[in-house]
Every structure is written in structure tokens, then in C-alpha cells.
Image (cartoon, rainbow, N blue to C red; front, side, top):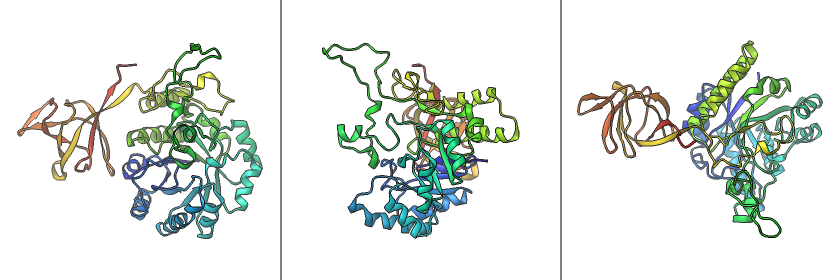
Length: 399
């Protein structure tokens, strides 16, 4: 059965997917393609990896940016720290990082930044000491099968999440326009901006939308049997900067899809229901990427402003205190009220809890609804922590 690998930025994200994923890939606050993911540092790396392992998951550390001469000493510290923390693998593509990881006895997974697109390239990295390659996102199913036939190296592919409008690891648009290099983790995502197109005479060209470079998210839940047939060893979920609710929903849907393929219960009807659940969390619309050939205009999200989900997280308030014996929390409704029956999420750096509002208390009385500005008691189904954020999940009426 292929391993399910999910991206996580903090312990809350790990908690959200621990019942579904097999492994977590993450980064610290340096040398990652997600520079804004700063919750994990060298100071708390040991604790984070221990938490991942305590959840029964493997921990893969990404060190996959461009490495410049002044970076080498810091990279050495990271690899040494990863060894001490018992990280299960380093995700890398720069030979300097690969060599140091191998020298320290760490497994190496070659990042998609290397754009590995054939079996000889995979074998080249095997000769360097790598044990797995994350294949280029620009490959189709038949090309992946061909690579599988010519190497027994572990192969990993992306199955869900954001797609770059450029070839894997080759985008310079952000660096040129704003000085933030996507290859160093500082992408400002100009491909998601609204653009206009002008003709040679300066006239504005009418188009069916204004987000001319924005690519739809990858979604392969309806094609999991075909991906399994390629013989790859691991499926990867993109989304290290997305919230814990996203990671919970996506990992759950793909876990059940993979399980159904192996117990013989997978059907297109089930896959469509999973896709509906996936569409309820952050997405830019869905496509199948390059798996069935080079995508055309239907692979672009020209008319969508970042999030096409029909559901939205609305900020409600914060947790003031937690009372474990009563299974309750004191909360402050800073943004809006809630009612019994509402679907809420309580989330923090180490907390992820999704539940319906079952009981509310105010002045020792049971109530069914609250107002903005109130402090009330809320029954909770799990542990929460002071200053955790509370969100209400509602249907987005703007679509």
C-alpha cells in the first residue's frame, strides 16, 4: 500500500492528520520552499519530531532551497540537529545537502525541485546515496510507469494541492518582480494576482477572467486506482501553509480512497463524495495536472480569487480557559456569536478540534445562542488551550 505523506507546519497539523497519514514532511525556519512556515526551529526540532513519532508517523525534514556559499555552515548545523532528533529522512536536491545527510547516515528523499523526469536521473541520485525521489509534477501516468519499469528506487508523487504555473523548481517570476525568490522559499505568488492582457496596439484584450496565470489545484481522488497501478511507493499532499482543518479533510479523504482500493470497495460514487468534501476546504478549483497529458485552459483558475471553496471559516473568538473535569472551555466571542448546532473548529499551535456546538452556558444557565462580545462556557470534545482560536464553518453565499 502506498505511503500517504502529508505536509505539516506545527503540532496542530500533525494532530489533525495523525489518524490518516503515514508520514509528515515539514521544514524549519530556514532553507525551505515555505519560508513563512516558522513554527518549527532548531530549538524545538527535537520536541516536534518526538511528537510526530509519538503519533506513529515518520518525520521528513525538507531542506530544499537553493544553497549559497554563506549557507553551508548553517546547513551543517541543521543536518547535525536532524540526526540528533532522529529525523527519518531529509528532503533535498542540492548535492551539498545530499552529501552531508548521507555522511550523517540519514535517508535522503530527492525533492521535486530536482525535476526528476526519467529513470536514469533517479539512478543518478541513488548513486549519490538517496533512497527515494519525488518525481516531477510534469509527468503523465505512462511516463511514471516507464520510470517504474527501469528503477526499483522508491518513487513518490503529488496527489493533491497547489500547482505552480512554472516547471517544478524553475520559477523566477516572483524574484524578478519583487525580489522574493520562489526557489528560496520567498515566493510572493504573482501568478495568483489579477492581470490584464494588452494587444500590440495597447488595446485591452477581453478574456474569460482576470487571474490569467493562476493554476487550479491538483486533485486525484477520482483516479487513485490508476495512480496505484503505476507502482509508486508514496503519495504526497501539498499544503504546509494551509490550516489544520484542510490537512484533516484532505488526509482523511485520501486515506479512505487508498484503503478502499485495497479492500475492493472503491467506486466512482465514493470518489465523487470525497471530492465534494475536498471542495469544502481551501482550493482554487481542481484539475488532474499533467497526469493525463498537458493541461489546457481548463487547468487555469482564471475567474477565481484564490479560494473556490463553498465553505468558509469565520473567526468567532478565543479560548480563555480549559476545564478538563467538566469537558468545557471558557471562551470570549470577539468577532461573532455562535449557536447550538453550529459546526466549529478550535485551533492553535498544538490544538485541532472539530465539533458541533452541543452546549453553551452563561451565568450558570444553559443557552442556545450567544452574541458578539460575550464570555460563555462551551462544552468541548477534547483538550483545548488558552488563546486557541475558534472558527465557525459556514456556507459561502458569495458563490
